[in-house]
Length: 425
Image 1: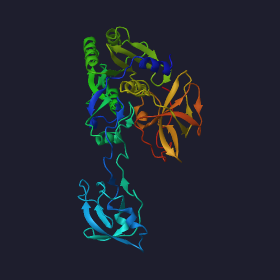
Image 2: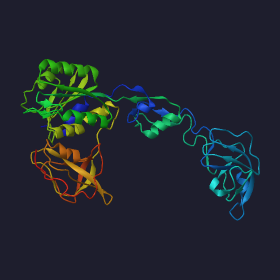
Image 3: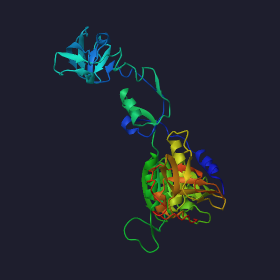
Image 4: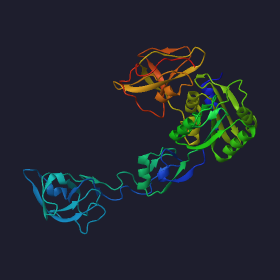
């Protein structure tokens, strides 16, 4: 067996970021920028009011209060998107709406809540004094022209898209989503309908397609291919020319005589590396290149397939998407029960569900730990990491990988709610 670290290093040594592309800003969410973003202008582009109220000379309101109000003449009303037609003179006020440009001569805005009078009146009673600059958003107070805003490889989130729009950008240079083909192989697999004796439903492909979507890649459903050498070769060759990466599952264990294994060995010109990784679940794993297209061959057991996706495929795809930090960092979580590692030299990734209890992250087993028990994986939102031969006592801290589908279960979930036995795989 080899360590997980060695397997991850080997995979990433064969992965390169995809070439950046220009995308409309509304298609860039979740991607990484491929160049530094420098502001081309001041935002906001003019002094504007942060509140509905009256633009004034601050000096006119010295000593103003509810008991000693100041009355000003209203010279005009400025709505957002319109501008003043004349300078503001002493003793005057301009009724102004949030976002409107400050009129010439005004140096403060008094909130409408601090005034008395009708919006249509020719005068306003001001019941509070304000300092110069009050309630004014200054030009360039968000960012200035020439100012660096985002370094290369910044994640594009909703606020980032808002920045792009503020600058008038319609497109942005980003690392693209990799097109990842998912292929199921095996004559024993079935899709929907009635099951024939000896057949099983294909759950891996839908799960892996969903995992790709969640990660931010572009999943490509390549369907189900029966155990036929020519059909398998054609499917993998087509995938290698139309996709940036390929994911398949099954046929990677030692001793397997599977046509998939034979075909992949030929198509990769011997570059496929068949590994036994010292982890539980997901011990068997294979990786290689068909031409320049990386191919990940995951274990056939559904939990093993998803765990190996989390530990090996996910970091590789994040690297393709431009990330220089593709691995998740474990966090410490307090165990609500005894969690045991394996005694066979493999690091255990125990499926757990996490919840915040008394402002602390806690974990407990999500159920049966067999690599075929998909229901426990469905309840899991974290993987507890336990080294070989070790155990984590109830109340102790445990390194834990929080999964992408993080959704805290209610803290009231008890061991009586689900089957928590930790059977070995």
